[in-house]
Every structure is written in C-alpha cells, then in structure tokens.
Length: 316
Ligand code: MTE
Image (cartoon, rainbow, N blue to C red; front, side):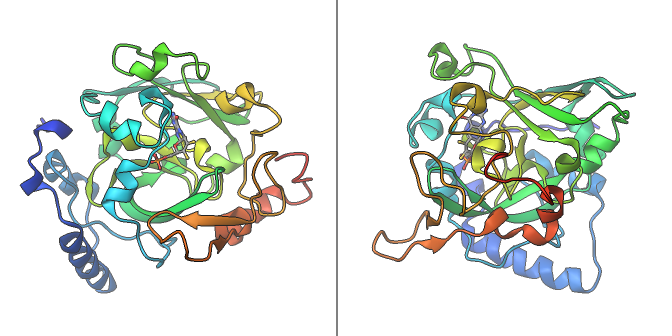
C-alpha cells in the first residue's frame, strides 16, 4: 500500500490538531473503548499520512494532567540538533525522516533491514500516556503514539544468547548538524537488558498528541522506557542489535560515574551533581512545590521484580 507522507514542514498549522480537539477525541475514544470498539492497525495507515486516528488507550496510562504540545516539542534534549533545550525544535525543522529503515542484527534468527512502514503495519498501535523523568530533575506527562517494544522484538526471534539489546541513532552529520561537534561520541547508543526490553511497558513511539512524531522528539521512531531516566529513551533509531554482552552506551561512556547502564528512576540514589528526590513538572509555575520522585518513576508494580536482589546503588 502506497502511503503519502507529508513532511513536518508541509503540514499547515490549520491541519494540526489543536490540543482541545485532541482531548475531545481522546475522551470519545475512551468511551468507545468501553464498548469494545478497537481499531485494527491496518485500518489506521491511510490516515497516518497526516495524523493518527483515534487509538485504543494502553492499560498503563496515567491520568495525570498532560503537558502541552508546546512544552513537549520546544523543551527537548536531542544533542544531534544542539545542546540547549530550545535548539532541537529550531534546528531539526528541516530533518526529513522518511523513508526510514531499521537494521536488525546480532543474536536473532530473523535479522534484516526493515522498512519502518512495514514494521508499523504489523504493530498494534496505541496511545500510551507516560511520565518522562529526566535525570536533570524535570518531568513531563506525554501522550505518545506507539507500540510495544517486546512485541516488535519477538518478531525478529532473538536466540538464547540474546541477553541485551542495543539501539543506535542515525549517524549523518549533514542531516544532524549537532554531530559535527564532539559533545558526545556519535552515533548515540543505548541499551537494555533483554528482560527489561521484553517487559510490557517500553514502547517504540511514532507519534505524540495524535500527530506524527515531531523531529525534535526523535522522528520517525524512538524508544520510550518510562521507569528509566529520559536519556535511555533513544531517538531516531536506525539499528537494533541483540547481544550476549552488555552494550557500551553513550552517556555511560561519556561520564561513567554519573550515568549508569541501568539508570532506573530512583529518589534514593543521587546523581553526583543533582539530588533525585524531587522533580519539577515542566509547564508548572516555578513557585509551585516540586513533585516527589517515585522509585521506578511510579512504575514499580510492573518492573520492580526485574531488579529483585540487586544493589541499586552499585547498579545505578
Ligand atoms: N536520543 C538521542 N539520539 N540524542 C539525544 O541527545 N537525549 C535523551 C533522550 N534521547 C537524546 C536522545 C535525553 S537526555 C532525554 S531527557 C530525552 O531524549 C528527551 O526526550 P524529549 O525531548 O522527547 O523530551
């Protein structure tokens, strides 16, 4: 099926769903879900050209107040497009993320290079409203459009030697100008233990607020791991590798004492430069009290068992 996909820059402001319309649509969708009206992913695709249609809601959604589209798309960390929070939404404007392929390699029976559209066609796309907690001490609540990472990985048939999964961002200085500066080792790499990756929470996000994923948020596809600090949620992924040994990750290589491999949100383990006990919700007034940070970012019920018996101060 041929899909015409508009570039972000081609989408007129009038075509962008205002937040209020989006919220109404979501309320409607939640009501229709009660009556059991689920959408098949295939039926979603033609409309994907502009925006995602109403989607089923994930069972893990938080009902906290959403951050605005503006907050989510103008306050970003994406060093490939500059190191200040306001850089990515300006510097990623002309990034054209399509067509896009993901290469899957390593310890699996079905490696290959796959077109993103084919990956999405096989996926069960939903809306996932997750808290994102950054190690710098701020957080947001974001309505992602995405699908289960575990469901996708299973289709590549990882073998018994696959103990970890490594993710890699596109390396292309001409399209990602921030890569001309050696602020990090490029390309950006992240990783998960296989049981973390196979947990029901992590998603591959392909949109937010019902729109295609904005460039500054990691277009066209990024990882979201809601119980870990934001830097684990790697953007613009082009490669996935199943590995027997723990992958070397970008932030861990750049400052091993500050950024561990696990990076689980944990108010009891401080970062050397920042306490992790509290967080500021972006969009809230500065004079408002900060929120208490919860262990595993509040997702302990789903993930605490993954770390039973582990010393979380050592494996931070
Ligand atoms: N992925 C890549 N490729 N490059 C980056 O600089 N920054 C990380 C993560 N993923 C980053 C990345 C950090 S530090 C955070 S907090 C989140 O993206 C921010 O995601 P957001 O901009 O969508 O809020």
